[in-house]
Image 1 (cartoon, rainbow, N blue to C red):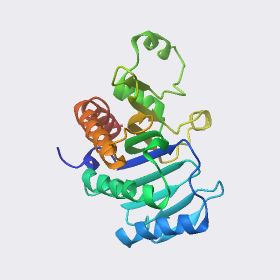
Image 2: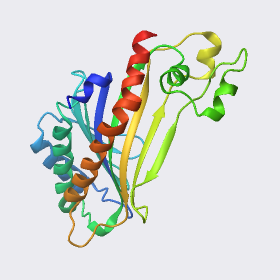
Image 3: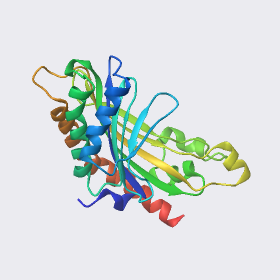
Length: 247
């Protein structure tokens, strides 16, 4: 299959590692971790702190394709927007997971959850909720209500979450977010904004004693791409792109 960017205006592949205990927040630990990451990716040179205590290192965004990484109180994240390939993004995430045990004192025991996310953004000026109805349809039980005379769809953000094993430790979730609200519908003034499709595969709980974060992430990434290519592309991304194109 070709590059995912052919299905959306922007796509991204992210990794999130949530911990049970607080991560080191000291100046020395944080700076040393990001310095090691910058050695791997020298163009990641924009370092800053957000108000809620989130530390961020990222590339310049003006090229449209960029890497980013964050450290929060109990979460380590890595992302790549519009990568040349999903494999290139996953290679970055693997390097992050190689660094965190040594530079942020992160033990395999300290894993609350680990997930891989594929995201797709579609730019659309108009009632994004109605576009979703036109592209993906509605649950049959809702169809007659949606066709009430004089009515307008104000909220339609379908999602589904599945357990992929018997103990529910590995799960996947497909969700769609729109940005249209009642003010936009009432005034007829719709900004150019994104419809976002997210597909996440997540595993919960500590890693096995002989398991690494890199290996665990690789298995999730393989499963995530398999499900995106096997189900999400043809049933969500393609019809949504086609519907937007003819509006």
